[in-house]
Image (tube, rainbow over all chains, first blue to last red):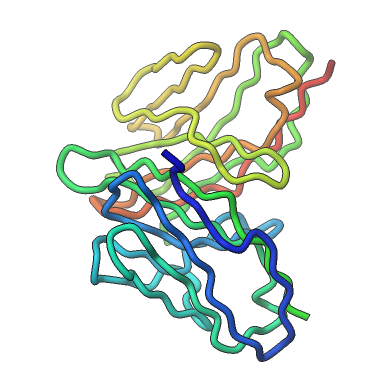
Length: 115
Length: 111
């Protein structure tokens, strides 16, 4: 099992450009998450999806959109990138619901720089 | 605002000693508690989960939970240089499928 995979690993954008970060998991998890991690700020939740077809805003959703394409895939889109979106982005997944404890497993991350 | 608080460190511990990492949380109804290890430039890795009061041991790691005091800790026995990393405490929100992370404690094991 590959676990949680993310593409690309690195990306440099110019201000105003758009891009989509891809995430996939093969653990049959129903919940998926997008975080950003900045020095001194810790992990902050951008969006999450509790199940296929549903998405909800997290702590810092402005400037981002998401799509839960199917149970395996959850993408994050930056429509018009800004320097403030320079960060490391992590995707995570977990099993949730009765009988589960919500442990989250992380992908390797995407390091994004917006110039 | 639900919060998870950790001392940012760095916490310096001699090799072979016990490293003690602490975390407090604000949500009284939190049910599940996690410790993640994150090496520089890498993603967080789950190393311990604990759900009930008391101690849980896994190899050199022991997680301790005290719900009355809203306190969770991680002990690392026989610390090794490879334990040098940032340790993130994470706590579930009220019957929600989200967890909230502390900002992490940097641990440095001195050879």
